[in-house]
Amino acid sequence: MRWIKEYAMPSPSLCDELIKGFKKTRRLGLTHPGLSAKGVDKSWKDSEDASLTCLPYDVYASTVRAYREHVMHSLQSYLKEFPVLSEAAGRLGFLEPPQIQFYKPGGGFYGAHFENSGMDLSHRVLAFQSFLNDIEEGGGTYFLHQDHTVAPKKGKTVIWPAGFTHTHRGQVAPREEKYVITGWISFIGG
Image (cartoon, rainbow, N blue to C red):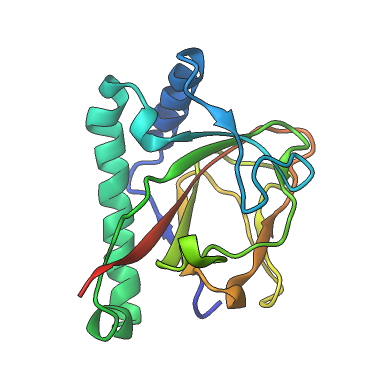
């Protein structure tokens, strides 16, 4: 798809370290029910989430840094393909920390949504998602207007526009756990 781009992590073993970090964060009690524009509503989004900033320091110091470098490298590739984003839009960067999202079998982000829906989210320009584990059945991200599903593959990062043109929803993995990281690239100044 023209605006939906996929990038591979240089070392998919990074995914295993991020999942371990999430599990440590859970043991510390720093995860929370998945939030959406509807608040906590398990009929809309049924997940357990944690900010990357909540991961224990031993994970954060090296693993999160390596993940962030991967995202920035992917973003640079995206901007080379669509230079107007950096030439005419001002500076882009992180305003919100990415979130690790864990979905139990049958869980998911069921509701169709886009990433800059609302005044408090209007700064978001691009969204990204990294799949942290392979899923055999379901588990992808479906883009409604493009009629396109991104297959869940460990180490795959996807970048797309945050607006309504890229409305999407998660596909349920009926028998497997799903781990993803979702984040946003925003306007951060002129």
